[in-house]
Image 1 (cartoon, rainbow, N blue to C red):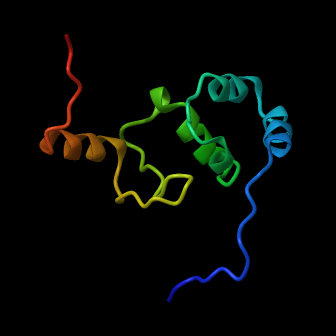
Image 2 (cartoon, rainbow, N blue to C red):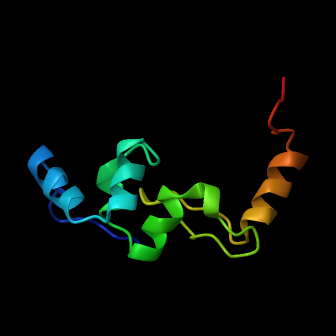
Image 3 (tube, one colour):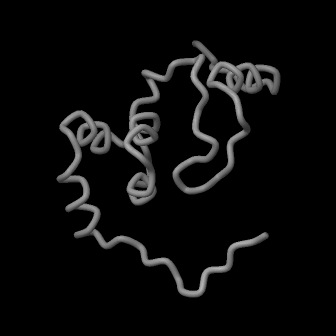
Length: 98
């Protein structure tokens, strides 16, 4: 089964993004302003719980399952953040400390 859009999806205007950010809590607003998630328009599409996840990666619980997709719809394999970190380590992608 595939989804076919009958009409193009409208991009939010700068005014709509601004109005949406006014409804955010102060903590969320600060995270958005510091650039915690690069493409703000996609954060408009997710639930409050997922918004918390994407705006505050420093608080991720490594034992909790992460969302199955990023806000822009890119699929992520099922598992926890710890599973993902192990997969990245096995792939040779690790932080380099100097």
